[in-house]
Image (cartoon, rainbow, N blue to C red; front, top):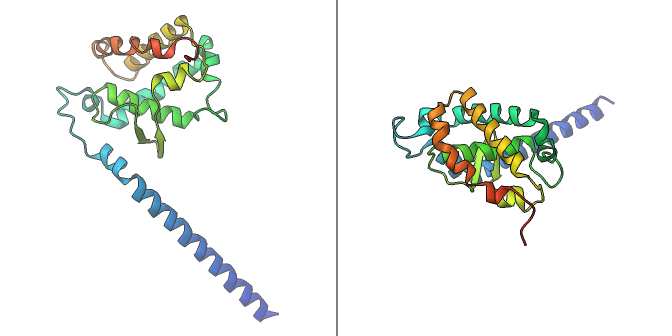
Length: 189
């Protein structure tokens, strides 16, 4: 009986080691696949804080904080409930993926060297961010002009709450409002 337990223990140890090696291999494979993306976030050419808002507001950590504030405020707005109710549904982004896409979009708007849309790596996940039309209008969210205006107003207030100056938010406003044709309305054929 004692020898039987030793064999079971040995088999269990072998299984644990095999599982550990498999996990290590998966991690190495993930790193090799996504390392260039991670490197782009760590090493970029954006200038200095005087001429680059991304650097001025703390890089990706500052942007992530601003996105957290903005998403919390946007989700709390009852008139936008139908827009955000799809978050986490089977054919839509999870909350974490939505934030990662917004991290990239805000970073790009504020001067980060990675364009939007593109693949992004923030919050520990890799997401392929889509363009505004494919993310909103073409998936049938049917966002109204009033909802878009509410979104922009809450976003502007949230960015100021997160420490971005009103002057810098005002400078971004034309870029944000120009997105309305890709966001407002139903799918285009």
